[in-house]
Length: 308
Image 1 (spheres, rainbow, N blue to C red):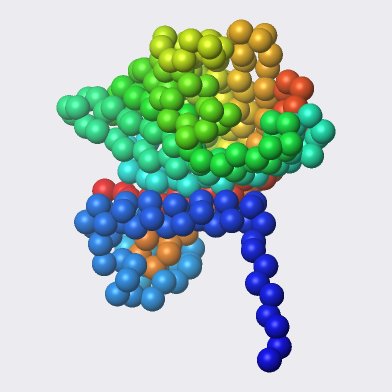
Image 2: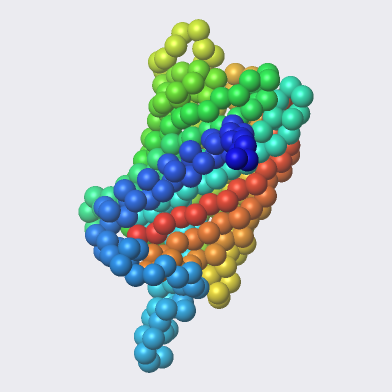
């Protein structure tokens, strides 16, 4: 009988497989909670098609479907849109660590839930729960598990200003959720956050900012005093394809150090069966960073959308 050797998967592949399993579990839970999409996935074959290609009937109906799709495509570019969504953001970074050969994979699970306060105001809940796998990122070791979570609440007017500006502001909270000491700061943190943007024609542009100070946690860990600034701009075509650019800049006031990854991406609105989704693919270059920061990276994001 021939001998068959079973070779175990590398740690990196195993970690990414674990993250993919987490993605599927999270989506299944979200889909179960979205009643209007309860029978969109299992009882019908899944098909991938442009978001405006599922319309049928007269011209008025087609135009109405296209208008809804256009509004949905622009809503995916608005951090405080009144839209329930579940973005699953996969980040791959290379060139980090003391020998510039470190790798990090980070899956950000980012549910967005709008809550109507009254006819004039909404509060938008944005949560970021990261799962990380990294090797040669800190020394020659490897780590995997959850990192610190971030919760933001934006109080935002239902209608834009007279000049068309959309804005929101509120608190941001950092939660020490890391399952490994090297994946988190072991500090509770809080501060203000705000976003302002304008959607004019095919263009979306604006900025998101927050600042976090630590107020509790492990006393032997460094204090947190950090500003995050994300200017962004994108252009959406008539086929609901968006081309965008942003910089997810962080300034560490304790170390007096900038980290500036610049992201360029393309995003497409689609339907998976009856389920609207947006797919995003992009590259990242680190224009500035401390010693040991990555040099470049890739991002693939799928967002499940649950419009009213």
